[in-house]
Image (cartoon, rainbow, N blue to C red):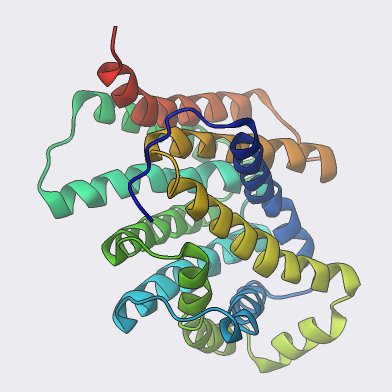
Length: 298
């Protein structure tokens, strides 16, 4: 594919990046709608089953070890989304979930440092403290928007996401769409076992039977819009531009998440949510943007 070389985004590429962040951000509202009928692990199971089949018939398996695909599929499927969907059933609102899960950025940095042996830089520590203060602000307000269990589950989901990032990083240059599709195969077995053990077949069957057209549309959107379009386009952009140009745009995900939850679901935006949003976003911005500013020519 070659080394990414363009620092400035053409308008069409910027539009694609904005479309992906909009899909990923508003997807939290879609998840909440699907959870009205489907148990959370059943929803995750259907999402990854549809992400794998039938597209795997048309996309060749990427040339990476099976264990790499399996690791990514388990961490992202059972870990990230299994835990996220479970939390969003009743323990955290969509807008706050879209914000708390961004802790993955810091977990990814810490895991990368653990693997490479690097030390935490001053700006990274400051960024981590800002984001931690934001999440603590959420934890201190118990108005039903988030429970301690919900925050813990979403943080574990963020940790699983960061672990998936490390596994994906180890895969090297790869067709991201094919990678996501084939790794989805390995998300299905653990999600099926977890759903059978915690939700039970009667609840799974009842949820599928009660699902209406809107629910199935939400499931398809999870597989097609969020997974295939989102990850496929994001990987395509990362293959053509420096990561430092594309990665900061992910800061828009919780903007779309909180905004769509307020507009569509009527999720209130109290002062403490705005404060938590500002703290987490400031931490993310400092962690991602500061190294670029420090290296920029005068």
